Image (cartoon, rainbow, N blue to C red; front, top):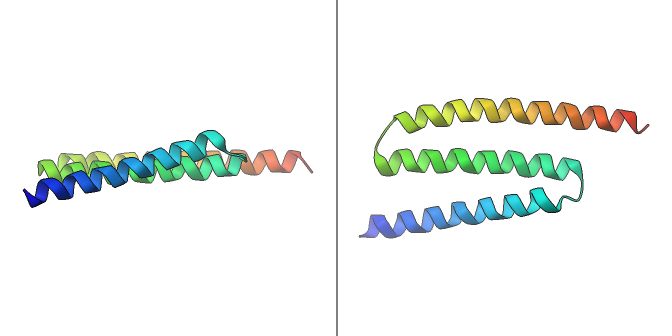
Length: 91
């Protein structure tokens, strides 16, 4: 019973974090804010996958979380390079 309540609280907080990250991604106001919001969203999704691994007691989810983390890191690097290149054009 206590474990179920704890799961509800954890998933609710993770969902709230996803909501705030999506709002920041949509509102901006700058492109760099959107990149940070996307990175935050990816980290929260990795946390959700890790919590699912604990809830279902299946280590396959941890492998999925590691692959997702690598792809999210590469995505962040690509967007950061894009933002950096976009700032060079404005000089």
